Image 1 (spheres, rainbow, N blue to C red):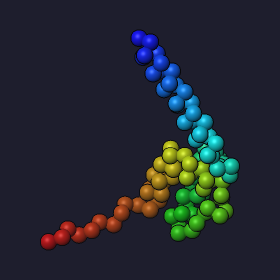
Image 2 (cartoon, rainbow, N blue to C red; image 1 turned 90 degrees about the vertical axis):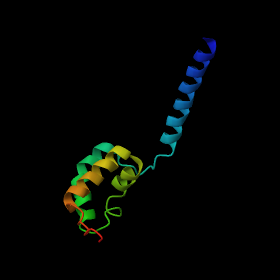
Image 3 (cartoon, helix red, strand yellow; image 1 turned 135 degrees about the horizontal axis):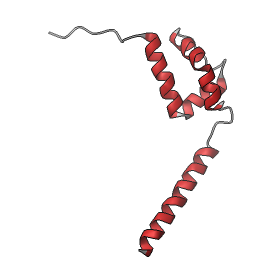
Image 4 (cartoon, rainbow, N blue to C red; image 1 turned 45 degrees about the horizontal axis):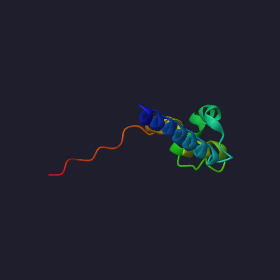
Length: 92
């Protein structure tokens, strides 16, 4: 029982240090989820049009690189804006 308690304690500290390490590696330009979601449609439309919005919106760009849930929202919106991928004819 004592070993299980020690393992649980070690896991807690390991998770704590992993979260602290991730926080310390955060890009200081990261705009955060709220601003990224406010700019999501503009950012996606610029990307879909072939433009690079990273220079115009560096904080939002940094956030999409760091936040998987927001990056998935961006990818989904881009997919919707671009429409279905062109189908390839079946090979004979």
